[in-house]
Image 1 (spheres, rainbow, N blue to C red):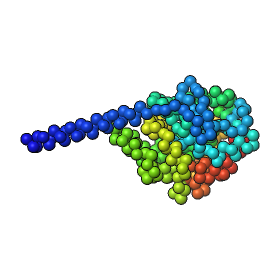
Image 2 (spheres, one colour):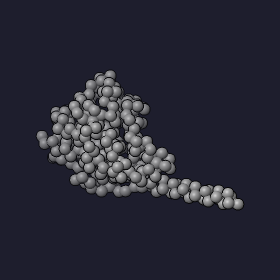
Image 3 (cartoon, rainbow, N blue to C red):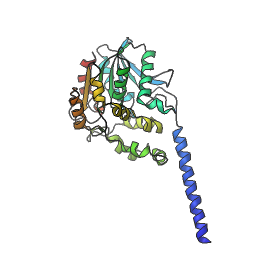
Image 4 (tube, helix red, strand yellow):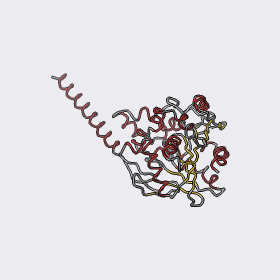
Amino acid sequence: MRFSRSLRVTALALTGILTALVVNAFLVDRDSHGATPFAGGRVLTLEGPDLNVREYGPSTERAVVLLHGYLSSIEWWEQVAPSLAAPGHRVVALDLVGHGGSEATTADDDYSASGQATAVSRALDALGIRRAALVGHSMGGHIATLLAEREPERIERVAVIDTQGGPGLKDMPVMKTLGCRPLLGAVIDRFRGIDAIAEGSLQAGFGADFPPPPLAQRSLERATHRTVCRSTAATTMNDERAVAERLAALGKPVLVIWGEHDTLAPSATNIAKFTEAGLTPRVIPGSGHSPLVERPEAVVELVGPFVA
């Protein structure tokens, strides 16, 4: 009798836990929000997801367009954008779908490489940009590559910074590996904003001797669970064809920049991949995965003449 009662209590407890997991996963999966101005930007109302953008310099039909990386935002370009605009260039930084101040939808396709490239294209249309030089960091470089393939008339040249050049050439962040597992991942995601838990994942985005700045935590906190788990541009594009090869096939000027001590997209293997494709990277000494934050002056020194 007691044994049977104990089994019933255990079964009820397990049922309750499973129900809680399912409900939590459902709530996390449905998490979304509209676009809001962020980091000095303004909201562009578009046909699809609305995007947060920040502009520098004059309003001309040609622009330098900055695309941030995975779980980042326009804030990451703040030490680069003004210097690029200083010679009189129009510079536009955009938050990708589900990042920074841009809209986070519940449609998985909006977070794909194709969905993100479509959103950026719509933003360029809305801003009256007819010719563009694209500069993409990490995942932003994958979006830039796809957009250049789609719109060769508008995209004049492409610069990528620490953008994974081929399949398997990136170490998956622990937060994404664990946080995107069925049911359990939604529970883990609830703890994403705790500094002690997030610090390890954030550090991978920078050199070992460069503590993650507050902007990295802010970017992480603004992302929904869907943003974390459905932003798959790097994997899907490289699985179709190595991005290093795709960039080399554009027939346009391409600049590849790499942080010397990148461990997230390991320097040695990625530099070798791009070099094999005929695009030898310019290496920034002492930097990890995010030279635009760690060594912004070095990024401006390389990108400035390239986009002029």
